[in-house]
Length: 240
Image (cartoon, rainbow, N blue to C red; front, side, top):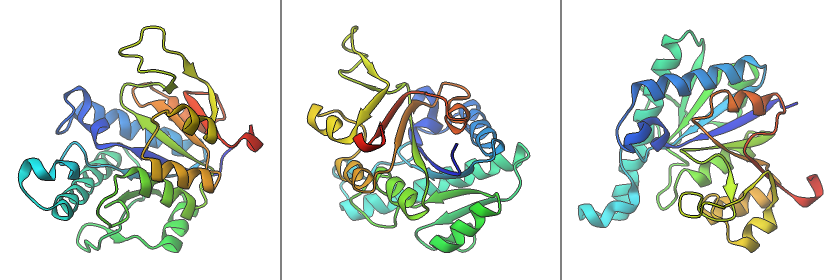
């Protein structure tokens, strides 16, 4: 059903229940999900976050400039991406490519769109670090940006502990209802929090479908690759 997908993987997902640092079992699970998705025949790129290492929005807590804090956060995405690359290789994944928006020649290739497309077409798993190389954005925006640039069929937004989009916080409202499908405009009208507003608007403007699902649901990414309905699908009303 799909030729190419981009997965947005938060740093928190690598941290597991602790929310900070790294969890070996979770890393193995995530690597297995990426490998299984690629084995369906779909081309897979992964945008890796860094919130488990450092968050740029904590600049004031550390008494540093926000730009410097965001630079640290971007380096955190590289740490996570190298760790994920290592686990993918250890689990037998061949030809895993790490590309970064900021040049780090000893560790990764620079992100060049046409080169990334060529890697994907050859069947490589492509890991994307450093966001888009600019401060004042979370990895939500570059996840959408890369998906649009790479002409992905959809962006898989892997959430930590949430299996989709609800009409209220399910942790606080027992009767909260999960949506199977939503339109972009309905998400905005309801004030639902899916990702950064700027990232969501970019997805809407380019009619990029978004799958919001729980990363803890084993096999969810693979099921989406096979066209199954998992989590919440956000798309334009014309494509519904």
